[in-house]
Image (cartoon, rainbow, N blue to C red; front, top):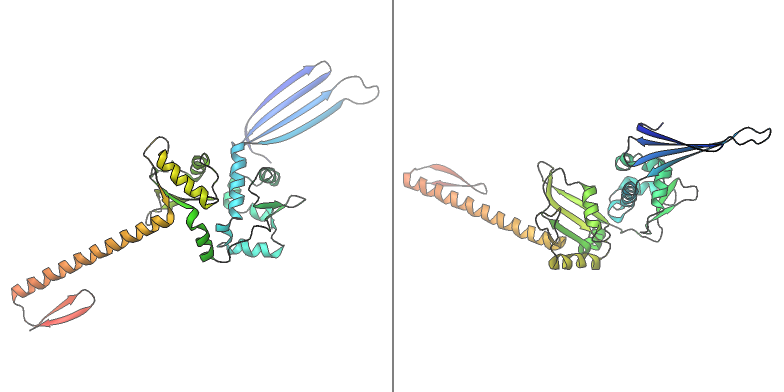
Length: 296
């Protein structure tokens, strides 16, 4: 049974024909149910009045895009390579995955569990990634779209089409759905990942964006140099290939490591100097690296 929060009813009388339309707003703001009942009271000799009822569930364009995006993510390179459960399930039936299984996944479940709503949305996908079976209760990745054989092969394939973008507000107001909508105006994307802080797991203001091709990724970077990209008219976002960003992070990590070692060496030398000044004999000193010496 559909939970609803409000309904609006309208009745129109046209001679002997009475049409009643009821629009129900459901708990899900992306869904509405419209029921139209028409009663024809025209004299049809010995026949009863003619009555027809049509019930239609309407899905918002926004929900449709969310469904397409989520289901295509399940069958994408980046997910299928590492999702052993889904990969094993696809082996059982020539790649076909029942909708009854997919609708148990939390993300899709939060959007809808209605099979017809999901199938109607996927019919409007133009990526060519998915196939629907004839009776519309199963989905599979298109057989022509081969998967990378390993995580290493996947990373190599994604290397030059993954963009690192930083400078987003570090607030709860920035959500994955909002980011997809934001990047949508710059073209199609295969996936977006929000980066998290190591300890708190909060959004750190950076995202990885995977574009369909290397050319599209490079085009995005070049365009960002010509016309700076802003999120909600705030600070300018910095864009670079993620591989370049990884190199920068590795350099920064090495620099911090060297600075830390330099500080440890400085503290050790200060400690040795202090002991020498105090002229302590037979003292045992613990140095970095677990080396021990005696001063006689």
